[in-house]
Image 1 (cartoon, rainbow, N blue to C red):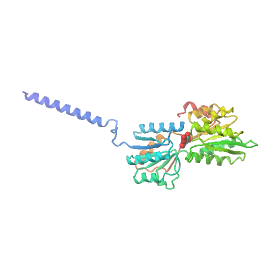
Image 2 (cartoon, rainbow, N blue to C red):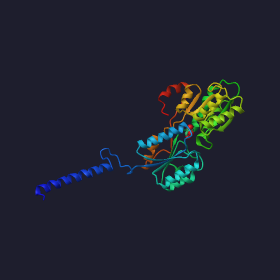
Image 3 (tube, rainbow, N blue to C red):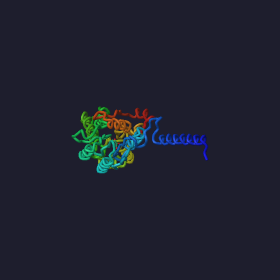
Length: 333
Ligand code: AHR
């Protein structure tokens, strides 16, 4: 039998225990000290459809997006479309069904997006284009496009060549390795380069074909170019990876890359920068893949109903061999 005093002590002990359990339970649901929210309470969800894994640039871009989502406490649903537009459309439709907060994607090609973009708009899900744009006339189908100016990259490459060949007295034969057919970077880089080289009538593109933005593609197409054309003075490759593949073909054909054939590429990923520093490439126009932090920032702003610019252009530069040597030690990708 309990005495009165013992009963009061026991009631107090139970009260203390209950308070402790409640406090522990609350801490498990959220950390009020750090202001952290519980895992799926108020956490934004981003559905991202990536082009594929065709190049060093793409790998760096994927890493940037995954790391930034983690840092921004955004739940990322990520899909690799393996270079196929139909896979991207399927992924976007899945994200609509899952009612994600925001959809972002890097379109493998420029055309054919209106229907699925309209589906997202009708479902009230904002879309952000990253890296590559679409040719939709209705700009209300997406909130913004964040990425490089590909025409400018082609133009800067062409202008470098015009300057480099200004004393040439005869024809300068150029071969061009294009990116994926129908993609914005392939269309725009070709356009910018073509416009710039008009300044020197000696500059002639004698062959132009897609190498799909891959090393293997660059190597295979360069082998054909070398077989079909006895005099090639310049290679313009729409990305570093194709240029790196072409290096193998040029060397195997007994020519010296960077000397017998001048090489211009775009991206400035580490491997490309190393080839430039080694004198195997001659010029690179930069295209930055580090779009993740800006994208996460935009996701938050769009969801908060803030007005954002329709176009956000990535700031980039160009590199000569000397500049590549200086930049390599701190290059992030
Ligand atoms: O869209 C960006 C381009 O796609 C990069 O230049 C290329 O390397 C990538 O595959």
